[in-house]
Length: 228
Image (tube, rainbow, N blue to C red; front, side, top):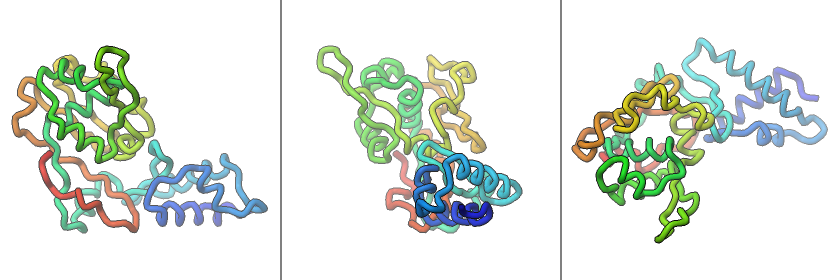
């Protein structure tokens, strides 16, 4: 059986090298069967590793796709200067659409338009799909069978959420029916939805709060600071 310190070192190295979240099962399967630790042992090791980062600039976080090591939000703005690209900026209309999908899923484009009171620009849906934040989960059994939209694991990972249960409850949001809402995500407290839907298509912009993950891959080409 592998020693506790050795297991912690392997977990840390694997999480740094992977460039993506790893599940407990994936970490377990790194070992030969003769010395393979149990899932509970790996989980306990990850908890100890997370505790060891308590006073450091990095943290070990469990998100929807598994565990990852990332830069703490408190220092992310400074660390992000290592990259020349400006962070992506998203229009209020896009963020409102994303919020509706997250909270009301599964939801159709028509239902989003009914709530917001304005037509949804096809580019918004395409952008959210291309970023991997939403997907088609089925069709409403009504004439025309419109597509039902739902969020993805990538959406949860981006906002450092383990599950949809980690979203603020509707009771915590102000004027939900009018979309005068602000989603406060763990640590970042970044505004996801701003102002009233009646002026949602005005050029107000919310800048995405960067999540800097320790990985060897470069930032994606679409990380330039364009307003979507």
